Amino acid sequence: MKALNASLFPPTSQKTLRSFTSGEAARFLGVSDGYLRQLSLDGLGPAPALSSGGRRSYTPEQIGELRAYLAAARPKEAVSFLPARRPDEKLQIIAVANFKGGSAKTTTSLYLTQFLALEGYRVLAIDLDPQASLSAMFGYQPEFDIGEGETLYGAIRYDDARRPMRDVVRPTYFAGVSLVPGNLELMEFEHHTPRAMAERTLRGDDLFFRRVGAAIAEVADDFDFVVIDCPPQLGYLTMGALNAASAMLVTIHPQMVDVASMSQFLLMTSDIMSVIEDAGGRLDYDFIRYVVTRHDPNDVPETQIVALLRNLFGEDVLGATVWKSTAIANAGLTKQSLYELEKGSVGRAAYDRALESVNSVNKEILDLMKEVWGR
Image (cartoon, rainbow, N blue to C red; front, side):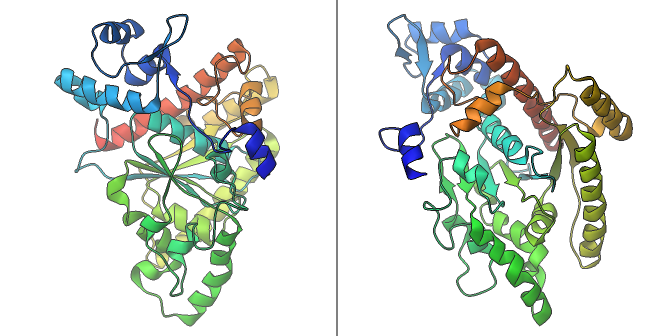
């Protein structure tokens, strides 16, 4: 795996985030490409890099500088350029859950996290899956980059080795994104919680289902959004995440086996959370939405299942769906997302279609969260 990392990300063997074209930067900022071009010609804002063909590109840091410049230059639109939450707006914690493997929980978490960061928000991604695929996508290999006590378990464990949450939050190469990584150590919480419950000495925030929320509260002022990639099981970690969350996304692949599995997941979640609420837990979501993933819009049976889901759940199913795409799959092979791929790495048409479907889903989710803030 070390050799693979070295070959994928030379010369440092570490992931870096590419520069973005002027057109991409304009889309992130909500202005026209021509406007950015004129700023560059007038010597205003950060100076973009110029290719031999005269194409302009901006680093992620320069896009942040552009946000600050535009907010100052156009104060009436400042909130659109610097959208970070205000003191009266609560931290939004989104749990991405389903215990069916292959429902694209990690992919959904990854793309939502990166989309929010590109929109100018401060995002904390928490990897609660012991398989740690999200951590690997952000450049941390769980087998050799993450030591003892460096996952969320380090901040929620029951013994004296418990650490402050701030000590387990790491920066990432992706501007605007911080990460609490995962690895197999997270399973320790599943093993030690029954013993702690049997001792009956825990109260308040020390109760197992409040520990995740209490840890997040320690760093709440540093972020606008927290995205939690839940493990594919309904264990103590997942229950802690669901109790901490202010919103939940349930990923669903439109196949009958997956729909049946999701049904079982929802039934079990309902039963278990009822018990937790009786014990003083909180399940007060601003919204719950079903996210259709890996959807082939040309597949008739899949289209029928999506229609069935919309008939059952109405507006609780997002209007946009994430399309099944070779572009997304090929990007994942090199531990990258579509946002990170260099132009031309995959077919242009496939890239554009896949990115449009991903952006449509994430924009719909962001609009829901803005609505919670009253924007």
